[in-house]
Length: 260
Image (cartoon, rainbow, N blue to C red; front, side):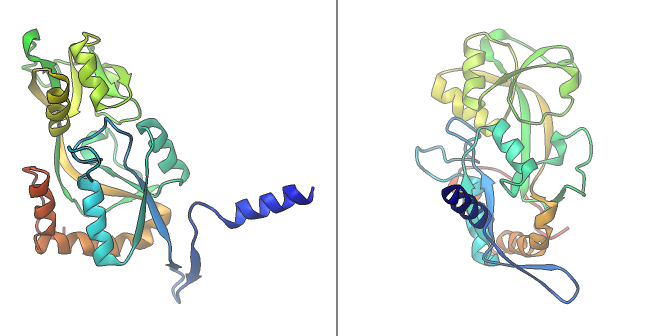
């Protein structure tokens, strides 16, 4: 019994999010040495964002977070979950934030649950097909009712209008196209180009699915960090550090130069 009690004490006194919390005069939380956790996924995912195009290299997200840490003094740590696990981890508080675009959602994000930073940069999702299939999607809703390759755990606009064929990651989607599991998949453009090259698949982009700006989506219980993060984002836009990240990853991304 003593061993069990000691084990429970150690578990409760050493949570994943260790923090020292006090309160300011107006009741706002002041957190010292708080570590903010975020997910970078597993191998085979959203390149060059979650990981770099070269094996072992950092991706856009890690590079951007390093800059935010540099200018805000906040501390961050990565975890690596498959997308479905990452979604659950954000909901339960095991991780504190992720990267999302409101364009992916059918409904507005609930401000009681999450707050958004100012926009980081633009991102586009496309319907991807194999060149030899000669598939055309001339109309905005021509994909309704079709089987479409998607990543398990990802959010897709109008997902109730088509049948999802969920696979583990972006690499698996391109392999699914190659092996005729489906004729159309939805991927971000740069990730699609990367994994198509890796797998020797010639692809086309017959229709844009969504276009919008990427934000950090922070759990509402971490919203006291929003001002610091936004100030850091504004600074890296103004001083050229964000553009340098784009250049290093050969991206043509755009961002709002001014704080909205």
